[in-house]
Length: 414
Image (tube, rainbow, N blue to C red):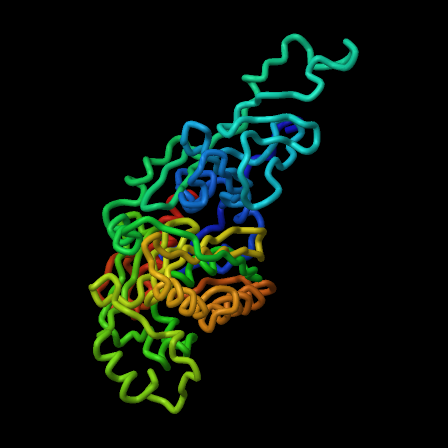
């Protein structure tokens, strides 16, 4: 009808109530993408915003996104964390144009409207006009034009936000399984070691699946298997929460035996391949449990990795139907000595935009997107390890991928 906003379209239909067949159109349909931004990223979910260490002091702020919505995280003068939409209430201009900074107030460069760090409008340029002419009318009230706020919460040194008032509190959303996996890795105060951004030429869900796919690593990532970093023959398993949306997988190794093999052979491989500088994979069992790889995902868009001593938060940022930005935040701990920091930085070369492993994940999703662009009929097969979205004591499985789609379908309404 004239004057009414067009209704959102219906989501792509699934072939059945099962999770083992995923319609290819979910990666190619522009209406589906539009629905995802509304029902998932603006829906009853929590999204990673930043490290608490990045906004440690009063006045610190970080510009980030939830879905495609620009967001500012700021610590005000009283020490409270605030998450607000990065959009001036006047004409919709971005307020923060850099990634981070420190300020006493937020000021729009367009018309000079100013806000405090909780998003309250504090000043309007020429509010009373010039020479008693113009200005805002008498009924204008600044307290009616605050910036839109998100719910904000911190856990294990990470800051999260939700655009929904109906989402459960953060710890309930995470659940005991996932908070346990997070606390295992993030067990003391954090510090940021570095940040990079990788541009992926494909739909955000393809990378979301990739991080939950435990068995492709032994096929696609030959570096992992060649140098014994992650093989399906290693002890481990997949842990999927009840919602299906969150998971963590683990692989274990015998650190002592690995060190003995290295000293004897000066290699980490059963093949002829050797490393000119093996320090890139030398590691210590800093957690004392033998877990050498843990990949943990939070629906919809965060990954926490521990690959030996390399620890990173990855953030999946949708930037359109066929474009995704992947932010990498390499982290250490405040009590790390110089040797451990150097070890984390060296091992960080395994991942990231130019990592020995991650380059392959960066391109393979693009191959999928190119294949589907002109042929998106039918559905993909996600049956490895059965049909359920549940924890399993092995990793030759797609259970966590099925969990992703279980959560996804519950939010999308089909």
